[in-house]
Length: 505
Image 1 (cartoon, helix red, strand yellow):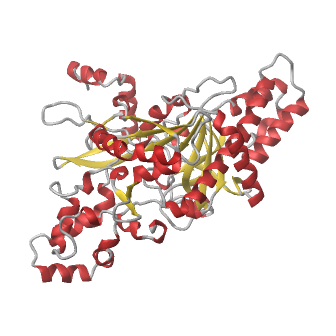
Image 2 (spheres, one colour):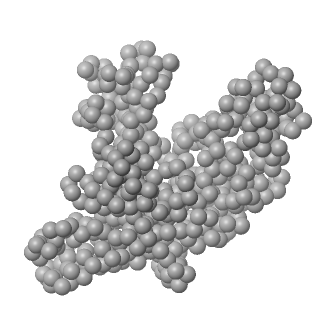
Image 3 (cartoon, one colour):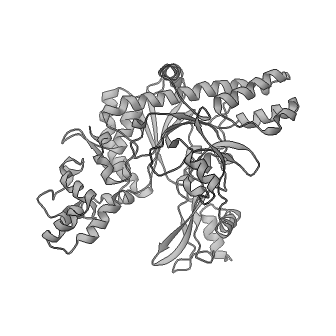
């Protein structure tokens, strides 16, 4: 299947031939659907917090977090092309038409009509050299075209999301930094921020950082340690044709594609942090909502610190020379089940002390993640569910709808019973109870990837995406879901989302 030139190309990317052969097998056989057993709901996998609980966990965070090395991790490599899909479609329809024809077409398109009506309120309005007095097609060209702002090809992080005044218009990148300085500081006054970006966009982020960081540091009296990384070439995946044969470019070379969001587990693994906060680049809010968002992140951080402290205490007991009593082990099982929602194996009652101890160590000695989840209000995406692995272990997972066989009525009913939605924020602990970093790649479920249909130069191909960052890439983590207010979930998936009330300053 592969020539010597192919093997040389594969080696140059740092990919093993075994990995390539495994990817080919995934194309041939597909990925098994997730074996979901029940939805995670309040009291059964999803933690509900009272106001008193929130204050308790917030205080834990404020008292203890600054002694840790805290890092804010933001995946920010994708271009914003999908965000402007409707405007690109409008541009295609309007080009070549007379002004009256353009106006008639727009009048019948609700979102496009509202966009032009509200154009002056958008934060990029002042950057348009051709504004409301010009025909619509010219405005779209100025916004999207290479000769204009070229917004359709820029990363979301560098797009202006909020307008406080004509001179204070902030990018998503700036809003993330301004939020991070409110809760990510260590005792040394350092705020560490890490973004994964495309190499094509690095210059843009560095230019924006040079513009905004000095001002933010003066205002907040903190030092911001900003770093970037790229998706690693060894996480690229091979593409195949309809016959599952390696897809080749016109020059005969193999075609590789980025492995998707899940490839960033390698970037996360490379960070030297004790506590890492993760959220998407497009989930930001203006200043009036920041206090609520910051409080919720502090609450999630406090939950993580309390759980970590308990887990580390248990593991230190289990790793000691003294043989723990069965009653002590049973109390650990109760904590894991009642506090963390961990499913208890049916055969547990038949285990002796050594078997129970072995299970407890294997269950607890993992990276920990606390996920803030909002109530499901019909938005597309994944949700929290209990999933049975190939080994029979049942664990809490974030599962995308594409991973579920929705034609199976029982599985579909389980999904419908889910009360919560994709994670708003994650806060992670990446070290074990001895202070050593986990190798995060050991906790990936490689059977949870995705296969999609693409095309290059008019030729169809199949592409493989690695297990999603907080889906299969974190499948082996110790997971806790926490209910958070919907106001903390303000993603910008389309240009029209910037017109929503939550993005008004």
